[in-house]
Image (cartoon, rainbow, N blue to C red; front, side):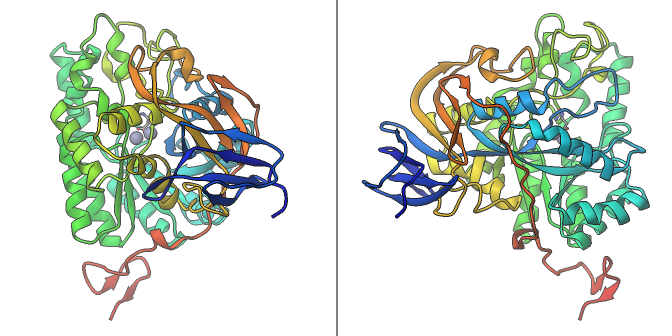
Length: 485
Ligand code: URP
Ligand code: ZN
Ligand code: ZN
């Protein structure tokens, strides 16, 4: 064996279902050998005794440096967001090339690719379509998917962003023809609009009423509807940020019918409830995200759906605004109604520590389940596996040295993001990243970010997991306009 660049010795590696004493040898940024008690010529050795060695996190739902459509500004660039990723053990992110209405998706994607060059971690793009014109869907989309942007994001709510049903069908049709996965923000826009209007008319405008404006039934209906559309056109779907029991039950029913429907939830749904928005003054605005926080019964249900694999991915839905800032949560002032407060919370750095602490340290899930949720499953679903999401020979040497016993009280400064708050300020977690490596290069250790840039774009070619089932409700394939015998 030629000399290694790096040998990670003495740790317990999480490889598939196993947590095993294994050393990991790395050459040219790739895992080249895995085995117990490895003796090899190496330029550098890192001592991982007492630590877990985990595949680097893959966060498949991250908003970075996006237009907001208002005077509000998202407060992370690729520079700060990727620092935050590294600080939380995440080495790959999938973020959004976001088309605003009237814009060319191709131009947006090109601009976004340029800005992403500042990233310290590897990255791929979902294509967010808010204006599915003929030009965008039939001309731009095929080239962008072929270039490796193999997922599309659509919204069923938000004014100027959400698509009408007929537009959704057009995007699903194009996704099937171009072999791209469709990811969906599923909430019923009309119902939310109605509830918002009635709440404001009743004078109930404080942040704590935001969850009332977006009841679980609005999410459940939209999840059920998008699944029906996917079933009719035979299009696989990923349902983003499932907030509780109602929508999760719809997803389980779809999976039981054999449909290719996957789902994620996020740490904020597992740790924050609607009542937490009932804070003095405007403070509840910090916890405004959509779909909103639900109840502790929903949280228990989510853990159950996670354990049973109905929900297979935990992303951050990192969507950061500053709190005390006229371009952040206070864009319309500090007494503004909930309906004009920017949605979203920062969560990139906190994702893995909060899930490990709530999940593994509290005995709800195993270590290997944790790794699957935050790394392996998203890598598989989004076409990055086995380059990412595992520590197999031939994989990129992205890994985290993780102390499963370390107790840490989270503060905003530890998040390394652009926001002035974290929803988990003051929360004590058990289990924390000691160091993060991207392709064999140390990018974070002991609270410090060690590098500038260095992230690479991850082009995603076609892959079998998201192929359609070739089953339709009738003998007619509407996408190909053929009759299936
Ligand atoms: O509140 C949220 N989640 N904001 C980010 C955009 C989205 O809906 O994913
Ligand atoms: Zn969303
Ligand atoms: Zn999102």
